[in-house]
Image 1 (spheres, rainbow, N blue to C red):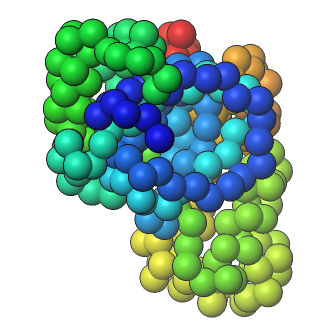
Image 2 (image 1 turned 180 degrees about the horizontal axis):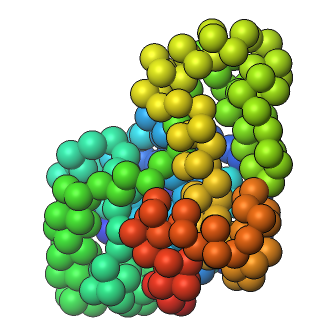
Length: 249
């Protein structure tokens, strides 16, 4: 274990299957390049370079990434730093926060000592992260709690490029259409169509962060034209796919 009260962890990871992990330190999780999926508290977020996660120590999270990512994260000793207000909060990164995180690469866990500036930088970054976490990102995918709804969500996720119906999803979930619709309403507060649209847009964000072409992304998430996809993406996120891509670079 590192002797430092805070340090930066910087590493390039190759694709890995989903796994559940937890850290014994408060964790500012950030991918400077690439995109990862983070699951916690019944929600799944996509973390491209425009977002970060602020995690309390010992919070279990699910993590996966299908393409290489460059992780640049900061870990804080819970005995020296106050815990985040929530166990897991995802927020939009600002240019200042991004530059601060990247600057912290100079102070890793193995260094014999950190220069005095490091302590000031880590403390300021923790304060800034909590301030940004006070306005959490609302772009997440529900995970559901019942086995039937989880099956429905998995089937929907696997067929984002297809024009599937609620009847097909219900059959895959081993439920009637009425029962499935009720579970969507009761467990996650959305209809199936609303959930499908959210899944499509978040998958599109993931593909944009991974460098895929916008035209290819449109077809991959079930749209027959780029113009229809662009309109749906802007309605969901408030910006065009091109504007979103510029923020990821």
